[in-house]
Image (cartoon, rainbow over all chains, first blue to last red; front, top):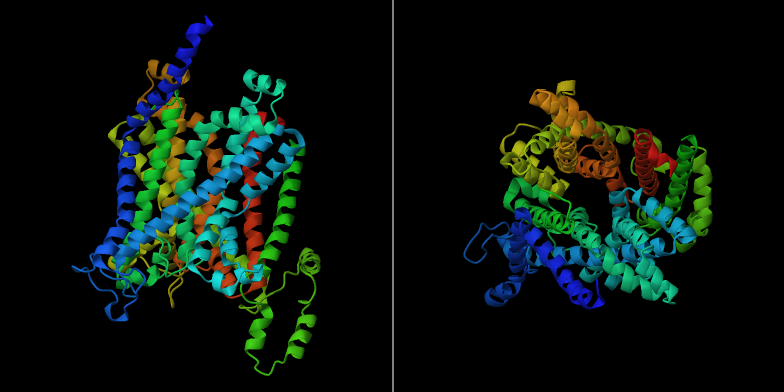
Length: 310
Length: 317
């Protein structure tokens, strides 16, 4: 093996890995179908902008004279219990729900990433403390804890009453509370991967030549724990969308008039008898989105793991 | 082994203690104040009277001191009174806990049976049409919002078909076992469907792995019937990892139970905690949340011990 031919081979192999992974992913039929479904959902929620621009429908404007209108040329899916256009609210609500899913996953993922890398890299007492803390978090009852955090009165935390009751506060609160609760699985995953990678020769070589932890962690460790994290991230997005829907449904999440797929089901218990459609659509969209996300996670796992067989 | 269990129990106790501090502080940050409600019902309350009341109830003391007093009382078994129920907290909580446990145990059994049957069928022909269909069902089960599934059950089986009652634990004027059973059908099916999804995938994966093993091939080669190979040779070996995972998924089951019973208006822990938080019933909310933590901790502990018992390598490390 001469050094001359190793260099180009290495680059080719690097491209080859991702091409191979893509090929494996493309053969995973549910995942590919889900990718298309998710793209369509993306188009659907973004269609709110041209829709509002063309029809001039205000998604928050209530009209008590036209509550529970059946589908019509003006309101394609009819109106909800406050006379608002159901279709446009489903689109906007989808934007909110998906955004909460992505933001909370990224924020929680970052917490998990930092805790996991630090824990695995430094080991010893740091590791023991961080992992006991993580174990403690895992042992907590997730839903009741989120409900308490969602019920907190922001004015008692020093925020102005105006902000505390605004739509923005409801949105950011749910992103924050989900991300501070849902980071444990990523932390454990990253820690396990870091533990095995930090003993590799090239990492030892880097440390021996004087590289500090702040250099080694992002350049040598993180790129090599990427694949399990991508899968975990994907699955977390699905879980977070479900959590958002539950909390908003119970009234502890995104606050109306800002719609989200969860809070559009707020009155669903009564709607089931009066206007079943209103109780069906948001939930159906949540279900389809989360199934698609989970299938994609499954496909990625399959694509990244050369040993896995269908 | 004993050391391992003791260690874990100590750890669980510590988590519970930390959690009580956290929840106690968080409860104080929730909207409303026990005194607000008294003042609201008494227009003659002057600021002096309010200050006096605060002193009587100890609300003028710092948070940590109040927590300390609460902890000392709680350790002697005095968890206070529920404001909305006008009863000692435990008398409200224990029946609710029992109601939730009943729902969880029945659903768990249904879910285990369902997932074994479907998981084994899927594993027999991986990639076949039955596998594809069951896989879709499993993913739907993992991905469905439990509260919405409950709504759809109500819509279809209570509102449209009138097969089962939509809420409550028994009808007025009836209350026999059959009637109670009828009220449990929908919650149990809802919760079982929601938990079965994950279980099916474990059973399927575990069965596929075992079916590839040498002893199964040997049994087949020696002419054992297909059902004998699957049910005796493979199934028993696939069981161990699956059982552990099922025990560990208690948290999912518990969250699901809280939502399910809230949707079907059953007086369990979920509805109790929810109502307590909305009704500013601090004592009840606090104790309810701590019991939820305790139950989760105990079940994780049980799963750990079972795991260590089934796989001795775990306990050593």
